[in-house]
Length: 134
Image (cartoon, rainbow, N blue to C red; front, side):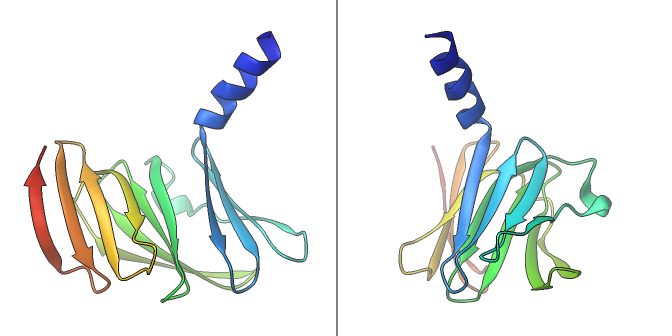
């Protein structure tokens, strides 16, 4: 029974996002973001520039072929894996303070929740469609 509780605690700290085009899996465990490639290679995707800020949410956009990470510091970053040695990081939004985010099933809309309890819906170019306080 103790192992089950331990495993449940570990699972609460894990987030995954999948690139279905290449069957790559992005895994976030605590503050560490890694890629398990379809070739079974384990690649560290952490960006030292943001290492002082914890990633609070990740999601992969199939339509754009990009991984998005929301950081505790308030940044929303786009991560593009060019190859296993070249990773592009771009800040998309700053000071948005997201607690979580997800793409819609058709990857056309982003739903996000801020740390202050505001639900934001955005289109793919990150224009805000609506903001609702919950």
